[in-house]
Length: 157
Image 1 (tube, helix red, strand yellow):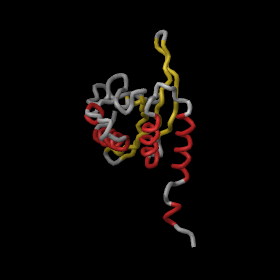
Image 2 (cartoon, helix red, strand yellow; image 1 turned 90 degrees about the vertical axis):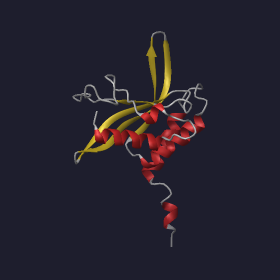
Image 3 (cartoon, helix red, strand yellow; image 1 turned 90 degrees about the horizontal axis):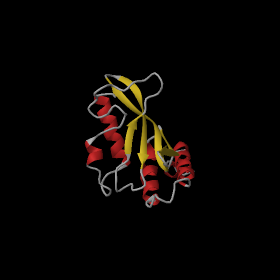
Image 4 (cartoon, one colour; image 1 turned 120 degrees about the vertical axis):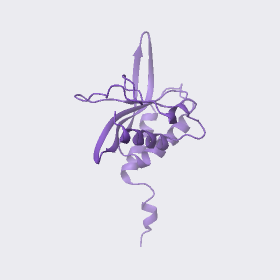
């Protein structure tokens, strides 16, 4: 007889998401001094969150360009009994976890941000007490995602 608890350690999709994370982290530049912490934090989130994907991208502004690690995908919410997927991008700057991730609602074509939302500015940046009181020792990405989900379930962006 096989041991069922051994196979429940990680579902195959979670294992695939973690493998993708490791692949993406190899592209993260040297400025990220806390790669091990970044990996463990994001891996913890990806175990339970099936809707976010790790990625790196190079962003240019003026004469500078920077390669950033980020997660993109959707946050599933329930609002007035209906389910919605809110598209988000979560950027991790090199000082993470000393500074919180920058979270954005990233509307798809044909989707608009609600004007004057309490927690999302016109550029899509998400503002939450959880982010403003971020602690590198106490804050976690699953708790952050829960805070975003609860906020948007009460008032979608």
